[in-house]
Image 1 (cartoon, rainbow, N blue to C red):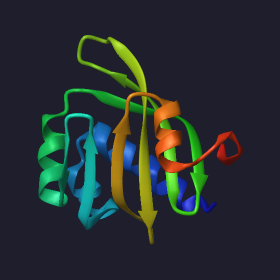
Image 2 (image 1 turned 120 degrees about the vertical axis):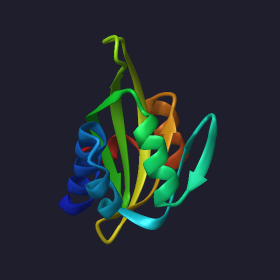
Image 3 (image 1 turned 180 degrees about the vertical axis):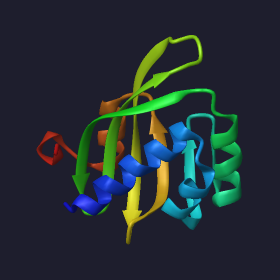
Length: 121
C-alpha cells in the first residue's frame, strides 16, 4: 500500500464533487476505463462527459488498498439530499487512475477485486 494511491483516489473524489474537470483529467490516464451496471466507456473525453452529467455528490468512506487497487465505500447524495451507499474499485498506476468501476455495494466491489477486510486502511 502506498499513500499516493489513497491520495490520488481522494483527490479524484474532490475533483469530481467540485466539478473541477481539469484536475479530474490530470488525475486520470489518457485511456481511463470506467463503468457501472449500465455500461462502460473509455477515455478522458467520455469521463468528462459522464462527470458533467453527474448530478450527485460522492463521499469516500472506508478504503481498502492492495497492489494498486483501491476499493472505496461511497455515500452518494443526489440533488434532493437522498443518499445511498455503494462502492467503486479504482486501479491507480503512477498516481493516475487507469480504471474505476462502480458496484452496487462494498461486498460486490471487494469480490470483484479479490480484496478483503485485511486490506482495510
